Amino acid sequence: MTSPTNNGSHDDPPARGTSKGGRVDGVKRVIDEVTTPGLVHPALIPGIGVEKTGRVFPMNWGVFIFAAVVAVGVITWAFAAPESISTVGGAALGWVSTNFGWLFSALAIVVILYMLVVGYGRSGGVRLGSDDEQPEFSTTSWIAMLFSAGIGIGLLFYGPYEPLLFFLDPPSGFDVAPESAAAMKTAMAQAMLHWGPIAWAFYALVGGAIAYSAYRRGRAPLISAIFEPIFGKRTAGPLGATIDVFAIIVTLFGTAISLGIGVLQIGRGFEVVTGIGPVGNTFLISAIAILAALFIISAVSGIKRGIRLLSNINMVLAGLLAVFVFIVGPTVFLLNFLPAAAVEFFDELGVMLSRSANDGEDAAAFMSSWTTYYWAWWVSWTPFVGMFIAKISRGRTLREFVTVVIIVPSAVCLTWFVIFG
Image 1: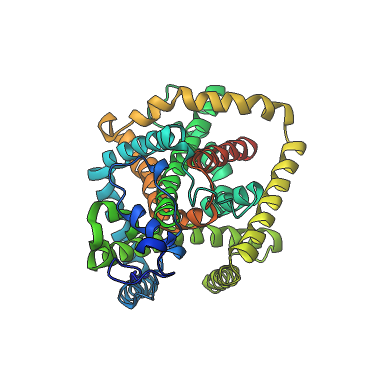
Image 2: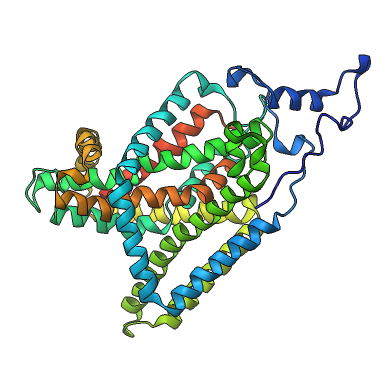
């Protein structure tokens, strides 16, 4: 929500003076090289962090006020007429799924392939930062924060629910009988399509773009800044502000879904444990307020303290829960099923990705309710999660970034779904 003011332009004096012979000093020289690299391979461009460019980024009040007005308006609408906003939202989802479902499906395929090329191609050795910059966080803390930011409460809700639902009612395109051994495998494959590498590829695309733009090329750490190679300096004006407002609004809707799922789980858990019966809106609103307060406190305390600590605690607690269920449950069965589920995912990948609304009413309904909905959900989360991933991934190479951001969380998701699903 900021706009850049360049205090180090070509007309200004160098920030540190000049060296002998009248040449600009190191910082000014690197800025010039980075901002006008020409047709140079990314690995050959000297990296420079945004904080070393001499730029300052004051609050963009226009972006803030406009986004705040839209957010307050939507929240007011939801409280005043919940049925109306539900009807409009459902109609919008149906329209998007019908007319642009193909675009989301194509985008999912393109994004995962592109990120694999970026990570394991010639650019894999490019560092998200200066050439000699080291990662700020340990690999364990990095993975913990990725896991907490990218999945969160959704995995607890959909972990047991989604595979079970697909087991009882196999999606269109799978020639398996409900509640059969084959249906177990296809159910896990379908759940992994929604929660596995493709979902994380969306995060990696935006997170990697922001990290490269801000920590390698010295641009503003904003969604609009990653479009600078396309739109040039217009990203610092109204066009960039529009992009940032859109990113904020999209993030609002995406996080609202996850927060709603989390609060409903808390409410249901409270009902089961206490036996007091259905909880009302007062309880749910109070839970939202508490969660929001905890988020604000952790965010204000910074990534190095609050967020990293909470992420590590979250990973430990989730790990202990998974280990407990794994040990007291059908351990041998789960060990046998884990590799089978992984193989089934790749075996059925073509069937799942080729499914479209043209395959009949059942396929169209499934795509609208599940796959297209998921792709839209992940895309709505990319501005928020992508910016966070960029921050915690500084100093990593693109190969490390793609490997950890896409493959490691996908493996964790697969293990979680096998244990709980």
